[in-house]
Length: 171
Image (cartoon, rainbow, N blue to C red; front, side, top):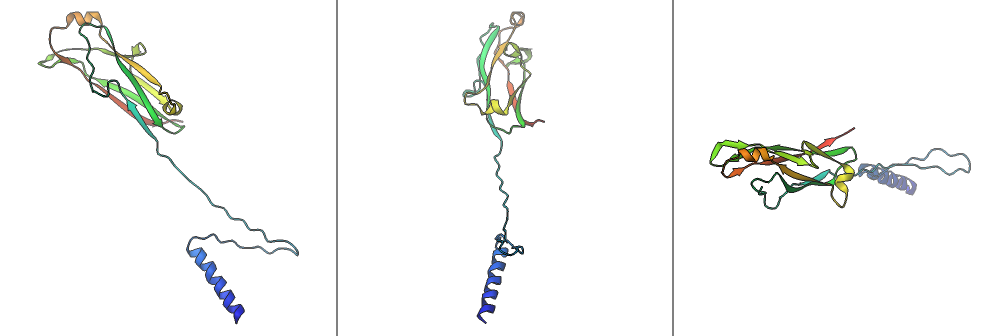
C-alpha cells in the first residue's frame, strides 16, 4: 500500500508540474549499465523598441532671425540620435514656406535651405550614425541671393521650416 501511495504521490507531482508550466522529461529505455539521457530546451526572447530624437536648429527658441540683405545665414545643425535597428534608417525631409510680409500676404519671396552648400532635400542616418556618442550633424544655411534681396521691399517677413523625420526599414 505504501508503494501505491508513493506512485500516486509521484503521479500527482508530475501532473502538478505539467499544469503549472514545468518541463516534463521522459526517460528512454537504457541498455544494461547505461544511464538514461534527459534533454529539454527553453527558448528565450527579448526586444528593444526603436527610438530616436531629431534636433532641429534653434530648437530652444523656435525661431532664427535672418539679417536683411545677408546672402548666407547659418541657422544651426540638424541631428538625429537614439537607437534603431541595423536594418533601419531615419530619413529627414523639410517643407518650407516663402518669406511672407505679415501685413501683406501678397508680398513674399523665396529662399533656399542649404546643407553642406547644396540644396537640402533629404538627409539619412543609418543605425550606426544614430547611435554614436558624438551625433552626426548637418549644418543648415538659409540662402537668399543678392538679386532677390534687391527686389524685397520694406516689411516684416516670416517663413517656416517644417522638418519631418521618418523611421524606415531597409533591405
